[in-house]
Length: 37
Image 1 (cartoon, rainbow, N blue to C red):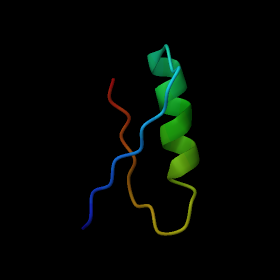
Image 2 (image 1 turned 45 degrees about the horizontal axis):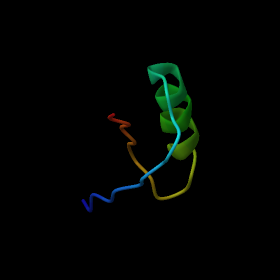
Image 3 (image 1 turned 90 degrees about the vertical axis):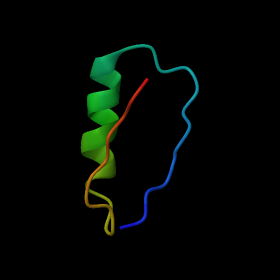
């Protein structure tokens, strides 16, 4: 499994991170997305 890094500027809350995780996991080829900040 390849791990890639996506940098997002301006995100302020963990709730936003959860929304990004759910959205990214709907993209074909992405098995799991974890947002850490």
